[in-house]
Length: 479
Image (cartoon, rainbow, N blue to C red; front, side, top):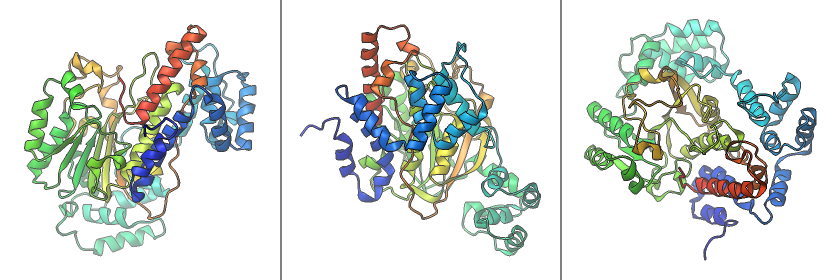
């Protein structure tokens, strides 16, 4: 039987092994939300879905803000507010914030989404460089006195405290215990036990001294140049773990964009790396190429993640930005089933990016029990020298690094956000997702390619964009 849009997600779910269903529940739910919003009865059906998600108290706060800002007929504003949590709605109401009607760069709904994102980020340590002790103190809400006690410890003692502290012990007693503990034997982390702790740990992250026996996976590597860099690095260090190199595109598309791709793949395979194409990092639990890899991956890399540009829209526009946030949430949830406990995940991004914001990365990691251990400036990272690409059809004619840049983003603001998988053993709830816009919402969008278009033309554009969203949720790249 040919699957219809309404039952695709259910059929896909049945194909996933029981112990991996949590890894794909969020992405299938997102696809189901989009698929239910058909042309015939989409708005009504979408309304019924939202009524099941939004309780009466939140609905009242949304209606209050819409009336307060005189935006009762603004469908894009409604879409933004319906996707917010209660505390975010409370902040908007109490902050005195009012969208600027005369802002020529951002519409009112875009301003609201940005305001909420900035408020959430103001409660973090920021997107810039952070050392291990700053992230450790933030996690456990430790004061400056604790920083002074820890910053002078040796490599061995500091690693002991970072590994053993659970928020209940007396820190001074744990430090004394660390000084009596033997050095780690037979592990990379046990080298140079008497070296200054902070300097040694920072060098580990910058020199990429990862688990030599564990597999390492690279996602979203458009031209595989980073995977090749990693494979060469591991070979020099004598690692026996594999490099699993993946691309989102098919080999045919890669050949159209990168004339060197066949040679790159050949060299990777000579380094005993595995190369897989058409891999969606949010759906690896459904991919047979990852069967049997549960709990084996010790390091994961995803450089400059992006959900794909949509012509006419800036990355931060709420009609398209939900894709970038969900990409990070679903990525980290998918990894949980495949990571070794203590395994590292590194996501490189620009701290000023407005598509995949740094907070999307750090919040998604935290939601899925990946501890933020350090933020390293990208240019200080041993693996930063590789052939960066846009990851779309632009690469056929031009690429970053060859007189090109990413929307004038400064390279010194590129960061490597580093996380360690530290599961509690408890069952997590369903993965939260940012709601996609309905077709009816898209039809009333006044921005981007929809601006100044007649009603019938807007309907055609809305259907095309909505179909694209469904394809993307199915692991099909467009653009």
